[in-house]
Length: 304
Image (cartoon, rainbow, N blue to C red):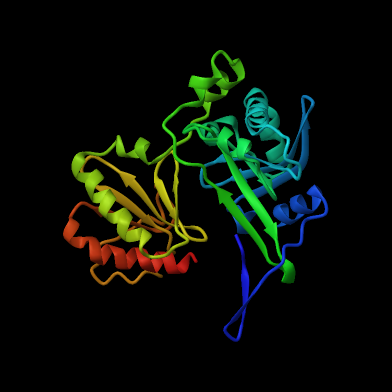
């Protein structure tokens, strides 16, 4: 992706400055985990059973571990490494929890972790066509991120998303026991998973709301989680739960900071709920969509 600097209306292409070492990518990423991915750093170089994890991170939103690997060479297998790391984690849950508790000074238990939402993130200056093709399955808990460094200190992290596929990795993996074991416990949640919980009416309402939300900005990404579908700018600004009779929206705005003259939102700051923020909306009447979009836009602007 070419980048340009604007100097009085004249664009000048920015030159790439390659990373000298894989470690440089790791150090930069670990220092900025929350800014880039919204993750918390746990530790580096976590070694267990002969495997070494470059970065162990934790996702507070999904209550799950994230394993991050950095690669400068092009000859590694995404599938083999990804499943090896996930299998390592599932076979050593106690060790992962101990590592978290010792480094974060907390006391989480096995049942506090949602192991089903664990994933592996690969970060590299480039990926081969073979590596990109290898992750074209709907149920792979892997993400590929390309990192590019430019002059003037600019750095770009870009998630590479292969074309959507309906094929399962289990179809092509055959009798691979590691893949089978990991797939039984780790799930990849998508919009279809949530749409199955709705009705024709609420699914249609969701589709209309989705189109309007995406019009708010080009950088919005959709991040389905186990409990809801998240809409993210810099951070999540709206989370949606699809039900049979209504949509339940969470707005990531602190109590007292949302302008809601019609008072249709609920204060959920003092009670447990799915989603981020202190405001909740129960949405079933399509005639309210314009007003609700105004509330969502307020949350979007606060999370940019």
